[in-house]
Length: 349
Ligand code: TLP
Image 1 (cartoon, protein in one colour):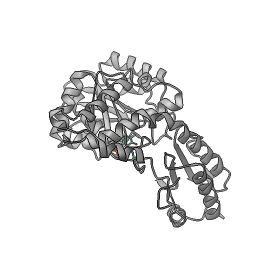
Image 2: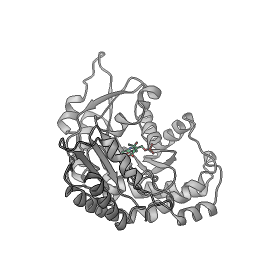
Image 3: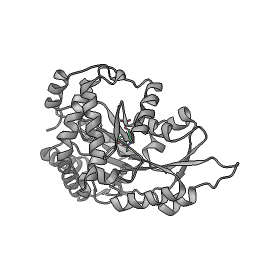
Image 4: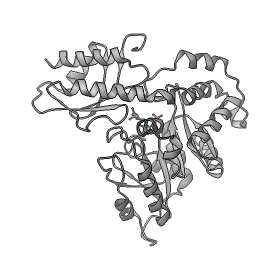
């Protein structure tokens, strides 16, 4: 079930279109002015998001990037330091928003191969009280960890992280853009993975298929301040119920089907692994992402491979000089997986 134009788009799960059911719910959505907190559909979505993450309250925001930024702005003051991974989305792909808009100083430590930040490294990054030091305020982790391979971080890891954060007096923010993928992969509830954090952002507009939007969840006080920060950033939306209606379907229905995407990622990886010239450099997929590296023996360059596949109707992402990322989602079915493997074979021979 590629898109209507026949294209098999594996570049990301951000490319997902809303389903027909979502489009109908959007057209019929009850709306109000959400800046007055009077949009009943947004209010329902925020209540459900809070419930599913086990937090007191939630806020609908325009994007994952905005949700992470707002969390950092609420937790930190100007000049404070936030500890994060060198492969974290907040460090790599959010345009330095925390520094540009919040004056927050990123303290970058290495992500481990399993996507975690080592608890010892977090200890090591913490700055003792001293006028020469920025104040360490926050640690940010990502689940699933995208650039490490779409790896889910375990409940036990999150518990360990909480203990270290408490010992050091740090807040914990979770970039849970794909927290429901992590939950599905680990056979846990999302709330099990968010229990030990002060705030969590997750996206409706990735594997959950909504056209727009992410949720930021935390305590009532945190969300009150987040609402102010969202307004400062110009993110106060009015009749946003038309968007929230799709988000409700994301949470009620789309969260239940993510294992299908994980199975297809495994099938895709198994098929591609058999083709000479590719290595699964991040190992077998742990959720909905397949990472491939071209071996040195391959003469074709990566952009040539990408464009030859594109001509055949398969889009893939480049994630490094000789690396590709392929992401499965609702709009990719078993036939699309077989066709992709077939076309990779064709392009490589
Ligand atoms: N990730 C996108 C790209 O920006 C890389 C993708 O295709 O994977 N946190 C994580 C872990 C993400 O993967 C993303 C998007 C975001 C935050 C930002 O979400 P948006 O795009 O809604 O701002």
